[in-house]
Amino acid sequence: EAGVAQSPRYKIIEKRQSVAFWCNPISGHATLYWYQQILGQGPKLLIQFQNNGVVDDSQLPKDRFSAERLKGVDSTLKIQPAKLEDSAVYLCASSPRGANTGELFFGEGSRLTVL
Amino acid sequence: DQQVKQNSPSLSVQEGRISILNCDYTNSMFDYFLWYKKYPAEGPTFLISISSIKDKNEDGRFTVFLNKSAKHLSLHIVPSQPGDSAVYFCAASTGTASKLTFGTGTRLQVTL
Image (cartoon, rainbow over all chains, first blue to last red; front, side, top):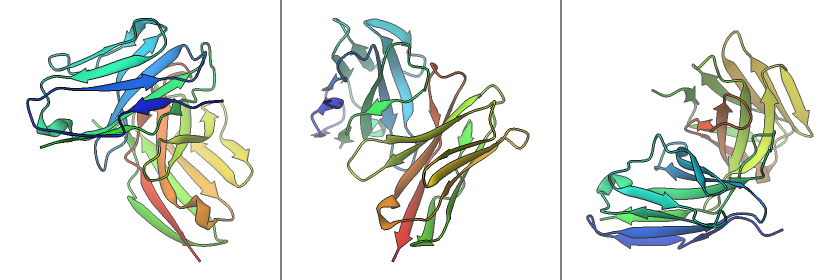
């Protein structure tokens, strides 16, 4: 079974530039999550999708971050304009519909450096 | 407000000995707890979980203990192996389908 795919793995940009990250969850997984992990901290949920609908985006900085999952499969997370404090690893995770284990399957992450 | 805390940033244990990783939480609504393991340049992988209706869950060398009155859980690894060297994250949720709140992680190093 293929895991969660993310790209790009690494991205370096200057502040005020824009960046987009892509995620393809495990086939059949209805729920998709984007987490932000800043160095030395645990992952923090940015947004959760159930199919193509948003379940929770309470911690997404909506003035600069946006995410979509138009067809209920893959997803894109965009940052525009980027700030220095956005430097982090952006982790995508998925879980099956109706899963009652709470287990999330994570991708390898996309590391963003903002200069 | 850090609702899930892992107060030990790092831990070093000899191979074959027991590793004990600790986690404290403040939100009394949390009722499901998980441990994830993370190797460098990889995403976290699920290790073991426990529901608040239990006080212990065991899976091979890994056991998680939950003390609800103290709002404390711990992960025991016995015996520890060099391949266990990784960062371990504690996570909690209010129900199995809700979002996970992670701790800051503990880096475990198992030495020969």
